[in-house]
Length: 294
Image (cartoon, rainbow, N blue to C red; front, side):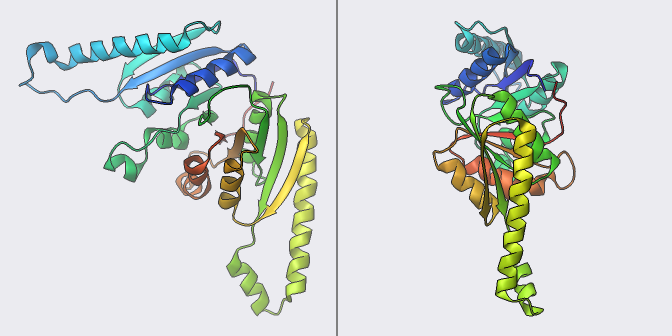
Protein backbone atom coordinates (compact mmCIF):
# COMPACT_ATOMS: atom_id res chain seq x y z
CA UNK A 1 0.00 0.00 0.00
CA UNK A 2 1.39 3.34 -1.08
CA UNK A 3 -0.26 6.33 0.55
CA UNK A 4 -1.01 8.63 -2.36
CA UNK A 5 -4.25 10.32 -1.28
CA UNK A 6 -5.51 11.19 2.19
CA UNK A 7 -9.00 12.42 3.00
CA UNK A 8 -9.37 14.28 6.29
CA UNK A 9 -12.87 14.98 7.60
CA UNK A 10 -12.89 18.22 9.58
CA UNK A 11 -15.92 18.95 11.76
CA UNK A 12 -14.63 22.46 12.59
CA UNK A 13 -15.21 21.85 16.29
CA UNK A 14 -12.81 22.41 19.16
CA UNK A 15 -9.96 19.93 18.82
CA UNK A 16 -10.32 19.33 15.09
CA UNK A 17 -7.19 21.40 14.42
CA UNK A 18 -5.23 18.35 15.55
CA UNK A 19 -6.93 16.27 12.85
CA UNK A 20 -5.83 18.73 10.16
CA UNK A 21 -2.29 18.94 11.55
CA UNK A 22 -1.87 15.15 11.63
CA UNK A 23 -3.28 14.88 8.11
CA UNK A 24 -0.86 17.54 6.83
CA UNK A 25 2.06 15.89 8.64
CA UNK A 26 1.33 12.46 7.11
CA UNK A 27 0.63 13.87 3.64
CA UNK A 28 3.96 15.70 3.72
CA UNK A 29 5.83 12.61 4.97
CA UNK A 30 4.42 10.43 2.18
CA UNK A 31 4.23 12.99 -0.62
CA UNK A 32 0.48 12.42 -0.73
CA UNK A 33 -2.27 14.74 -1.88
CA UNK A 34 -4.73 15.83 0.79
CA UNK A 35 -8.48 16.41 0.64
CA UNK A 36 -9.91 18.44 3.53
CA UNK A 37 -13.66 17.94 3.68
CA UNK A 38 -16.38 19.52 5.81
CA UNK A 39 -20.04 18.53 5.73
CA UNK A 40 -22.78 21.01 6.59
CA UNK A 41 -25.51 18.98 8.27
CA UNK A 42 -27.25 21.65 10.34
CA UNK A 43 -29.28 23.43 7.66
CA UNK A 44 -32.76 24.52 8.77
CA UNK A 45 -35.74 22.69 7.35
CA UNK A 46 -37.69 24.48 4.63
CA UNK A 47 -39.93 26.97 6.38
CA UNK A 48 -42.27 29.30 4.42
CA UNK A 49 -42.35 31.67 7.39
CA UNK A 50 -38.63 32.43 7.23
CA UNK A 51 -37.74 35.94 6.05
CA UNK A 52 -36.89 35.96 2.37
CA UNK A 53 -33.22 36.70 3.02
CA UNK A 54 -32.92 33.73 5.38
CA UNK A 55 -33.89 30.96 2.98
CA UNK A 56 -32.06 27.65 3.04
CA UNK A 57 -29.98 28.31 -0.07
CA UNK A 58 -28.71 31.67 1.21
CA UNK A 59 -27.84 30.23 4.63
CA UNK A 60 -26.05 27.29 2.99
CA UNK A 61 -23.98 29.70 0.91
CA UNK A 62 -22.90 31.65 3.99
CA UNK A 63 -22.06 28.50 5.94
CA UNK A 64 -20.09 27.04 3.02
CA UNK A 65 -18.11 30.26 2.57
CA UNK A 66 -17.22 30.36 6.25
CA UNK A 67 -16.28 26.67 6.33
CA UNK A 68 -14.11 27.02 3.24
CA UNK A 69 -12.27 29.95 4.81
CA UNK A 70 -11.69 27.92 7.98
CA UNK A 71 -10.27 24.97 6.06
CA UNK A 72 -8.05 27.28 4.02
CA UNK A 73 -6.73 28.74 7.27
CA UNK A 74 -5.93 25.24 8.57
CA UNK A 75 -4.04 24.42 5.36
CA UNK A 76 -2.24 27.77 5.15
CA UNK A 77 1.54 27.56 5.11
CA UNK A 78 1.61 23.89 4.16
CA UNK A 79 3.49 22.70 1.09
CA UNK A 80 1.07 19.79 0.73
CA UNK A 81 -1.16 19.68 -2.34
CA UNK A 82 -4.56 20.30 -0.72
CA UNK A 83 -8.10 20.21 -2.10
CA UNK A 84 -10.87 21.74 -0.02
CA UNK A 85 -14.38 20.34 -0.26
CA UNK A 86 -17.44 21.73 1.54
CA UNK A 87 -20.79 20.08 0.89
CA UNK A 88 -24.26 19.97 2.43
CA UNK A 89 -25.64 16.62 3.57
CA UNK A 90 -24.96 13.70 5.87
CA UNK A 91 -21.28 13.67 6.72
CA UNK A 92 -20.81 9.90 6.59
CA UNK A 93 -22.37 9.70 3.11
CA UNK A 94 -20.29 12.61 1.80
CA UNK A 95 -17.10 11.15 3.25
CA UNK A 96 -17.82 7.71 1.79
CA UNK A 97 -18.41 9.16 -1.68
CA UNK A 98 -15.30 11.34 -1.62
CA UNK A 99 -13.16 8.41 -0.53
CA UNK A 100 -14.35 6.51 -3.59
CA UNK A 101 -14.14 9.49 -5.95
CA UNK A 102 -10.54 10.19 -4.93
CA UNK A 103 -9.53 6.53 -4.45
CA UNK A 104 -8.30 7.54 -1.01
CA UNK A 105 -5.75 5.35 0.74
CA UNK A 106 -6.44 6.71 4.23
CA UNK A 107 -9.22 8.59 6.01
CA UNK A 108 -8.37 10.77 9.00
CA UNK A 109 -11.12 11.86 11.40
CA UNK A 110 -11.62 13.04 14.95
CA UNK A 111 -13.35 10.86 17.55
CA UNK A 112 -16.60 12.82 17.36
CA UNK A 113 -19.35 12.68 19.93
CA UNK A 114 -23.09 12.01 19.79
CA UNK A 115 -25.00 15.26 19.28
CA UNK A 116 -28.52 14.04 20.04
CA UNK A 117 -30.60 11.07 21.16
CA UNK A 118 -30.69 9.54 17.69
CA UNK A 119 -26.91 9.56 17.48
CA UNK A 120 -26.66 8.03 20.95
CA UNK A 121 -28.83 5.15 19.75
CA UNK A 122 -27.60 4.69 16.19
CA UNK A 123 -24.07 6.07 16.50
CA UNK A 124 -22.33 9.36 15.88
CA UNK A 125 -20.97 10.39 12.49
CA UNK A 126 -17.51 9.10 13.45
CA UNK A 127 -19.02 5.81 14.61
CA UNK A 128 -20.95 5.35 11.33
CA UNK A 129 -17.87 6.21 9.29
CA UNK A 130 -15.75 3.65 11.14
CA UNK A 131 -18.40 0.98 10.60
CA UNK A 132 -18.90 1.64 6.90
CA UNK A 133 -15.73 3.17 5.47
CA UNK A 134 -13.98 1.15 2.76
CA UNK A 135 -10.44 2.40 3.46
CA UNK A 136 -8.28 2.40 6.61
CA UNK A 137 -9.27 5.03 9.18
CA UNK A 138 -7.02 6.99 11.50
CA UNK A 139 -8.88 8.44 14.48
CA UNK A 140 -6.88 11.35 15.89
CA UNK A 141 -7.05 12.06 19.61
CA UNK A 142 -3.68 13.65 20.37
CA UNK A 143 -1.87 16.72 19.10
CA UNK A 144 0.44 15.97 16.18
CA UNK A 145 3.52 17.31 17.95
CA UNK A 146 5.81 14.88 16.14
CA UNK A 147 5.55 11.86 13.81
CA UNK A 148 4.42 8.64 15.46
CA UNK A 149 7.27 7.18 17.51
CA UNK A 150 5.66 4.22 19.30
CA UNK A 151 3.09 1.97 17.63
CA UNK A 152 1.26 -1.01 19.07
CA UNK A 153 -0.64 -3.37 16.78
CA UNK A 154 -3.32 -5.62 18.25
CA UNK A 155 -3.03 -9.03 16.61
CA UNK A 156 -5.79 -11.64 16.82
CA UNK A 157 -4.31 -13.52 13.82
CA UNK A 158 -7.15 -12.49 11.53
CA UNK A 159 -6.35 -11.04 8.07
CA UNK A 160 -7.76 -7.69 9.23
CA UNK A 161 -5.33 -7.45 12.15
CA UNK A 162 -2.42 -8.28 9.83
CA UNK A 163 -3.59 -5.53 7.46
CA UNK A 164 -3.81 -3.02 10.32
CA UNK A 165 -0.24 -3.84 11.38
CA UNK A 166 1.02 -3.49 7.80
CA UNK A 167 -0.65 -0.12 7.34
CA UNK A 168 0.68 1.16 10.66
CA UNK A 169 4.20 0.12 9.67
CA UNK A 170 3.77 1.91 6.34
CA UNK A 171 2.38 5.07 7.95
CA UNK A 172 5.32 5.40 10.37
CA UNK A 173 8.20 3.17 9.23
CA UNK A 174 10.65 4.67 11.74
CA UNK A 175 8.47 4.13 14.80
CA UNK A 176 9.23 1.56 17.48
CA UNK A 177 6.79 -1.30 17.03
CA UNK A 178 5.05 -3.70 19.40
CA UNK A 179 2.84 -6.60 18.36
CA UNK A 180 0.43 -7.59 21.10
CA UNK A 181 -1.94 -10.55 21.36
CA UNK A 182 -4.55 -10.95 24.08
CA UNK A 183 -4.96 -14.61 24.99
CA UNK A 184 -8.42 -15.15 26.38
CA UNK A 185 -9.91 -18.42 27.53
CA UNK A 186 -13.56 -17.78 28.38
CA UNK A 187 -14.38 -18.58 31.98
CA UNK A 188 -17.26 -20.83 30.94
CA UNK A 189 -14.88 -22.88 28.78
CA UNK A 190 -12.37 -23.19 31.59
CA UNK A 191 -15.11 -24.24 34.01
CA UNK A 192 -16.36 -26.84 31.53
CA UNK A 193 -12.85 -28.26 31.27
CA UNK A 194 -12.77 -28.67 35.05
CA UNK A 195 -16.19 -30.32 35.09
CA UNK A 196 -15.11 -32.98 32.58
CA UNK A 197 -12.14 -33.89 34.78
CA UNK A 198 -9.34 -31.68 33.46
CA UNK A 199 -6.99 -30.72 36.26
CA UNK A 200 -5.92 -27.14 36.90
CA UNK A 201 -2.34 -28.16 36.14
CA UNK A 202 -3.43 -29.46 32.73
CA UNK A 203 -5.32 -26.23 32.04
CA UNK A 204 -2.23 -24.21 32.96
CA UNK A 205 -0.13 -26.34 30.59
CA UNK A 206 -2.71 -25.78 27.86
CA UNK A 207 -2.53 -22.01 28.36
CA UNK A 208 1.25 -22.06 28.28
CA UNK A 209 1.17 -24.00 25.02
CA UNK A 210 -1.26 -21.46 23.52
CA UNK A 211 1.01 -18.64 24.64
CA UNK A 212 4.07 -20.30 23.06
CA UNK A 213 2.19 -20.72 19.78
CA UNK A 214 1.09 -17.08 19.87
CA UNK A 215 4.68 -15.94 20.53
CA UNK A 216 5.93 -17.97 17.56
CA UNK A 217 3.26 -16.56 15.25
CA UNK A 218 3.99 -13.02 16.40
CA UNK A 219 7.70 -13.52 15.70
CA UNK A 220 6.85 -14.72 12.20
CA UNK A 221 4.60 -11.71 11.61
CA UNK A 222 7.27 -9.33 12.89
CA UNK A 223 9.72 -10.85 10.42
CA UNK A 224 7.24 -10.47 7.56
CA UNK A 225 6.64 -6.83 8.47
CA UNK A 226 10.40 -6.18 8.50
CA UNK A 227 10.07 -3.89 11.50
CA UNK A 228 12.12 -3.96 14.68
CA UNK A 229 10.12 -4.20 17.84
CA UNK A 230 8.73 -6.22 20.68
CA UNK A 231 6.12 -8.94 20.86
CA UNK A 232 3.88 -9.50 23.83
CA UNK A 233 1.16 -11.98 24.80
CA UNK A 234 -1.16 -10.93 27.61
CA UNK A 235 -3.90 -12.85 29.37
CA UNK A 236 -7.46 -11.60 29.57
CA UNK A 237 -10.24 -9.83 27.72
CA UNK A 238 -8.85 -8.21 24.52
CA UNK A 239 -10.87 -4.99 24.86
CA UNK A 240 -9.75 -4.46 28.46
CA UNK A 241 -6.12 -5.17 27.58
CA UNK A 242 -6.17 -2.80 24.60
CA UNK A 243 -7.87 0.01 26.52
CA UNK A 244 -5.26 -0.34 29.26
CA UNK A 245 -2.49 -0.15 26.67
CA UNK A 246 -4.09 2.82 24.90
CA UNK A 247 -4.26 4.71 28.20
CA UNK A 248 -0.80 3.73 29.41
CA UNK A 249 1.11 6.53 27.69
CA UNK A 250 3.46 3.93 26.17
CA UNK A 251 2.11 4.25 22.64
CA UNK A 252 1.26 7.03 20.20
CA UNK A 253 -0.81 4.88 17.85
CA UNK A 254 -2.80 1.70 18.40
CA UNK A 255 -3.64 -0.33 15.28
CA UNK A 256 -6.41 -2.91 15.17
CA UNK A 257 -8.41 -4.78 12.58
CA UNK A 258 -12.16 -5.28 12.58
CA UNK A 259 -14.55 -7.27 10.46
CA UNK A 260 -15.60 -5.86 7.09
CA UNK A 261 -19.04 -4.79 5.92
CA UNK A 262 -21.24 -7.69 6.92
CA UNK A 263 -23.88 -8.65 9.44
CA UNK A 264 -21.44 -9.18 12.29
CA UNK A 265 -19.39 -6.00 11.78
CA UNK A 266 -21.43 -4.01 14.29
CA UNK A 267 -21.11 -6.77 16.87
CA UNK A 268 -17.33 -6.87 16.48
CA UNK A 269 -17.07 -3.11 16.47
CA UNK A 270 -19.29 -2.92 19.53
CA UNK A 271 -17.33 -5.47 21.51
CA UNK A 272 -13.76 -4.33 20.97
CA UNK A 273 -13.13 -1.48 18.54
CA UNK A 274 -15.90 0.71 19.92
CA UNK A 275 -14.57 0.35 23.47
CA UNK A 276 -11.05 1.16 22.31
CA UNK A 277 -12.18 4.14 20.24
CA UNK A 278 -14.27 5.49 23.11
CA UNK A 279 -11.69 5.00 25.84
CA UNK A 280 -8.31 5.41 24.14
CA UNK A 281 -6.20 8.45 24.91
CA UNK A 282 -3.92 7.77 21.92
CA UNK A 283 -4.65 7.77 18.20
CA UNK A 284 -6.28 4.63 16.78
CA UNK A 285 -5.87 3.11 13.32
CA UNK A 286 -8.72 0.84 12.19
CA UNK A 287 -8.46 -1.43 9.16
CA UNK A 288 -11.10 -3.83 7.89
CA UNK A 289 -10.15 -5.12 4.47
CA UNK A 290 -7.02 -6.56 2.92
CA UNK A 291 -5.01 -4.08 0.90
CA UNK A 292 -2.31 -4.44 -1.72
CA UNK A 293 1.15 -3.22 -0.69
CA UNK A 294 3.35 -1.89 -3.48
